[in-house]
Image (tube, rainbow, N blue to C red; front, top):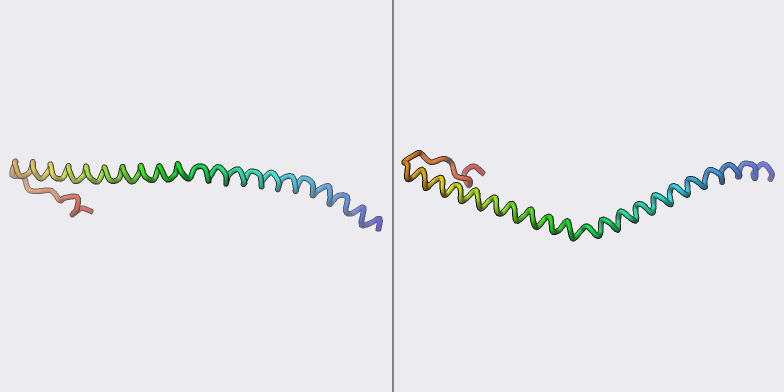
Length: 87
């Protein structure tokens, strides 16, 4: 019995820092999940902004092609491929 107690003392001494490390890790993970949940609204807002920017770039590319076609028709220059044909 004394041999078991002598063996348990170092094991318990090593378990204390392991439990402390795991507890700290669990707290950090919980904080990350809370922070992540709070930033979901911001993420959705950024996705909407990116979609708006893509739409704007697409519209401007089409307008530039229209201007290019009009200038080429006025100057009698062979037409360059349109965005729809390049994509």
